[in-house]
Image (tube, rainbow, N blue to C red; front, side):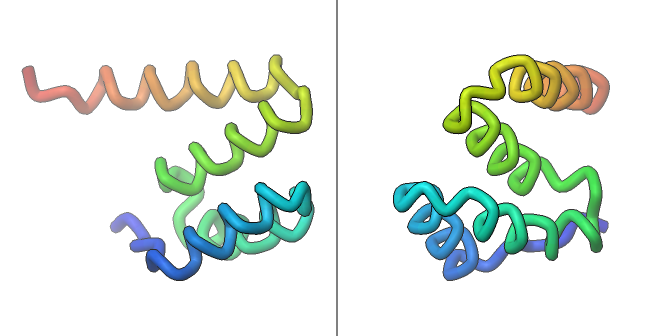
Length: 76
């Protein structure tokens, strides 16, 4: 069952990312991923951090994973 990410946590993560505090943001994201490793919202946050840090290859892999997951769950 997917873990819901409270809006307040998302706001905290966004603020940390804007300040360039990527490690702190990742710690907050990891609290969600520990409970739900395939949480799409959390994985998108990880991808955004990787992109902002210039880790384009890692970000691309995460996006490919999310796209593949979405295609497999598409009811149409």
